[in-house]
Image 1 (cartoon, one colour):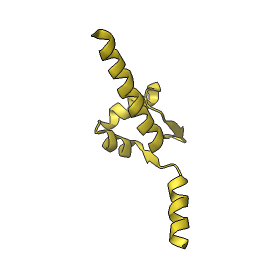
Image 2 (tube, rainbow, N blue to C red; image 1 turned 30 degrees about the vertical axis):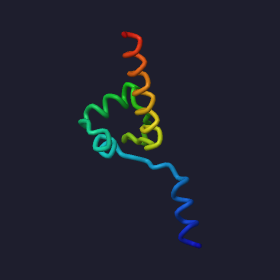
Image 3 (cartoon, helix red, strand yellow; image 1 turned 60 degrees about the horizontal axis):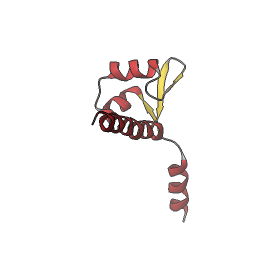
Image 4 (tube, rainbow, N blue to C red; image 1 turned 180 degrees about the vertical axis):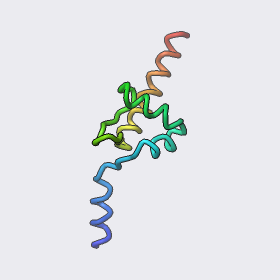
Length: 77
């Protein structure tokens, strides 16, 4: 019972990722992630002098980017 409650609490917490973790997750160079975060292309915020990313926001960003790309392709056809 206690283990179930602990897992439910953990599932509700957002996963916060570092720049390096996002770079590995997206298979991009760290400098690309830094640039995209700085430009506002990638959902992120600065905590002190380091960038932080919500995994859920990154996953949502991937889905919306894919949709936008697919819409561009269908418009060209």
